[in-house]
Image 1 (cartoon, rainbow, N blue to C red):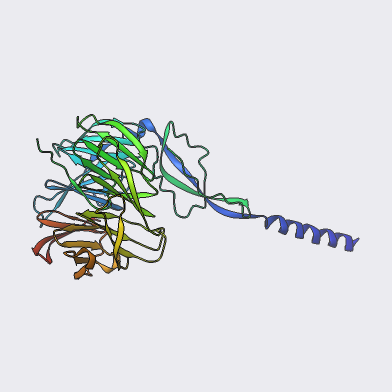
Image 2 (image 1 turned 120 degrees about the horizontal axis):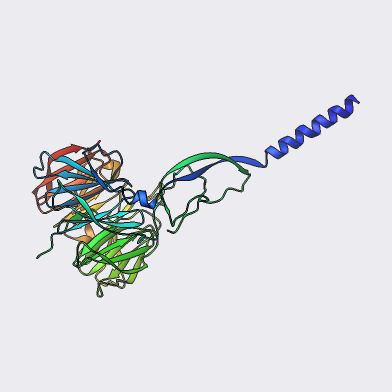
Length: 404
């Protein structure tokens, strides 16, 4: 009898152990949502506050706008560049990009385009909204998530504003991949090389991950959607030059003609290995940085020079090894490259086929740069830097403004 009981215990223990081995704990991301009605009443102007999650930078007249990732836009009065002052925060849920023309600010708010009157910075107001115009929205799924549960999310009525991570039991090796859910002379501002909004004449061009959306802004306060089409693969940035839009994607640069400005047409693609890649263009040459590592793809990081004199056949003509590049910009013969932890690097591009590095600022770790006529703006995760052009090949620091 004792042998029988012992045998049953052994069998039971083995069976339980075997059952447990069929399961494992996985991290599941569950959306936190609010109704679209509540979401669309959330655009309000608030008092100045620290920037905790620095996004993109935009310059307009005497103001600098800095995005708080997915939260809204901080306004900095830069009348005195040696002493900039934050004056307001515009709460815009789901915001990443802005563009401004004649005191009218256009911003993405998750799936909506929001139009804001900034003619009086002391009385900023939303004046128009085009709802559900962006069909693909970056939901910022947490990196820790192994699986996403969209079961209780209704894209028709709700908007995702955050995530809850839950540890759940799943069958071993039965983890789903992360799901995604489709969802007079003009006064224009200037964005950095990481921008995905561009205003050209009477049109606002925007790009999402795979899609270009075009709005007519002939009536600034009442934009109208005129065009939507495939833009390329994993688009991250957009730059305008001489009648063409240059889109930077994770595996290439896509050139779109604005011969018909209401309906841009893709005319060529320059393919490279997978990497994060902002692009700027001056004349017959495009300058593109590829950042390897992390989520961007390959380990190699480089600055590429591409001959775009024939827009139908862009050709790589030079390549320079970098450490950890982000945004870039140019003024005259100077090419400014934000090389992450290696600082700001300045190249002489008089001969685009033979770039020469002329200076390096290792004391700044900037992610994007805007070369204005009278000064250079640079931004990092913690500070806004402003430099003056001292000579053709040098710059001098004007101010360092701590953001957080």
